Amino acid sequence: MVKTVKKPSKAKTEEHQKLRIRVRGYDHKILDASVKQIVDTALRYGAEITGPVPLPTEIRKYTVNRSTFVHKNSREQFEMRIHKRLIDILNPNSKIIDALTNLNLPAGVDIEVKMI
Image (cartoon, rainbow, N blue to C red):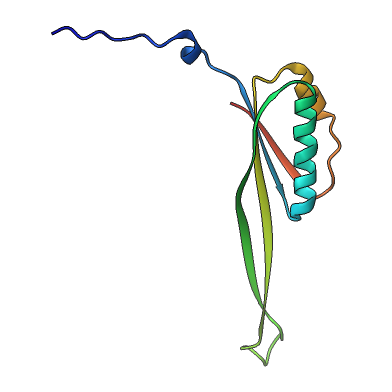
């Protein structure tokens, strides 16, 4: 018995470039507004987008003493929530990249851009 092996088509062997954007921020309202601005800019130039995908919120908790010396059992707890979103832009061209670099986003929003 002879097995025939199919070769993958060109569409599967072609590698597509992807621009992966990770957006982080402390305030989810400002974060969502800046993600909407990024998506609108990319769609204006005809990009294909997947996302925004909400990633798990990172919660950092801190416990500190209320008093400096005597009241050891009296403590106070604080937490910082870091909200994250992920956007993928498939096959970006130079116009899209230029438009995204010239984008004015509010303070408190951190952006990581990677080419995959």
